[in-house]
Length: 327
Image 1 (cartoon, one colour):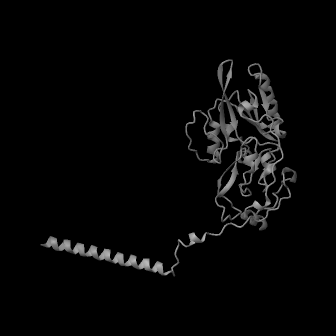
Image 2: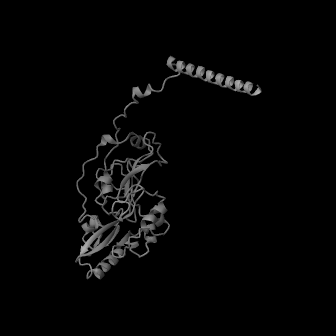
């Protein structure tokens, strides 16, 4: 399969946010409760239930205020930092160029969220683990982000955000063809936007979400020159127990099928048990009395006697009322 990509043209975006709605509808992502922060931009950040959003920026050109609308989602990098730093090999490259997350392998360490130059992955709650019984970690923290509508692509469809874009600001197709279209569009708008550029052709060895920008990347909220850098090593002693057991039992392979060691920062990592979890506090366990404790039987006796007295008083009261009516 040829490498696929999305081309986003900021000059054509009208900020209708139909792409945001389409993403939520297709993936059945819940709406989020937000507040008015003095901007039309909403929601303010990506989250486990928001994988695609629009940034709103104001610029001043010759005293005239202009809006800049910029898509914020996973860029599906050819050299993805999130893949490079993942200690459980939960991120892989697909044949079409997208980057996907295996949430059963994800341990919620947050390294992808911390080091991604585009701040795309976000941790959230997840409780679906068909292969793994996670007794103490369900639901647990895992990473979420755009997956380039992998299921739609497999059925020959375009991503939901592209399908719904009214002004055609989003295009989808073979990456090579979109690079040519992006360059042609930049040349066409250079007179009106001298700082226009195609973002994503070469960044991180090529992004699979490219932008036609009107201003410099930083003005659109994008890093000027994202790089794969040196990152702190992952502490082997912090693998959670459930992940270690899953690998030991063969429910998760130590290294995912079709993956390549050069994709990862630490290809020889071996899961080791985490420090034991603290025991259930004795003070808490004493709150629940045992049936063999005398104090429990004493309180039960008091309750039974009190109940009997209350019932007897009620019956006596009713009989007295009947006798009063007869007289």
